[in-house]
Length: 254
Image (cartoon, rainbow, N blue to C red; front, side, top):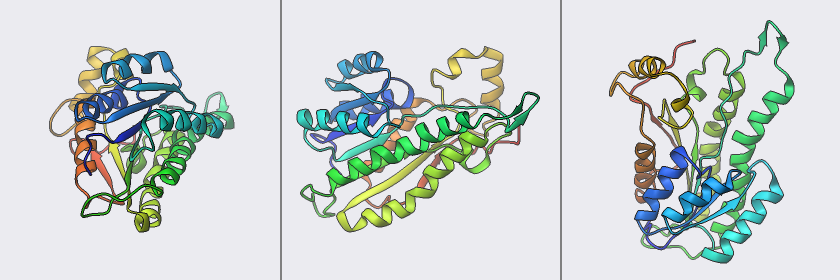
């Protein structure tokens, strides 16, 4: 799909992989709309790419519907939707304080999985009404962010792994469902990415994490996630698949 001139929605665009993707797609000529609960930070990224930012809680139907309406009024219906919004979580299902509070598990699922589906369903509904483009007759593409934790979650990642595993599992059925309309669905499963979360840990801990990656022995850069997004958009044969971006990393139990 041609990126230049396309309306793009990126959830979680205020920082990390979402912000890097906004910058790269903006450089390619896309019209960027960022959805983030941290709207002030999102506005700073939007200003860099001559885009827009809207306050949005992806786990709330009304919030996403309102943000979608505002974005569409400015840029028209989006042909590209990138789901980067999410939270991390680490807690054993049962520890010395007892079982994990159910509310914690629900929060992770609500934001990571339900939030992804919430934006997907609305973006897809708008995309299928658009005029198909080019030889492939493509109308749009949705790219979701999973994690290697979906495949080999560590101890303490039951909630997080479940949320990301759900994103992996919905990729193929969603792609099959939307194929008749010329809308593709893809996923990216990053490994260890140098996002603001990792900037809070010590240099020694960062080095230990980087050493876990077979090659290259470092944390992935957000720009590498963004570069993969650009390739997926441009390569119409990529559909219904989740691509690992992890330097051959396979997580151990702990």
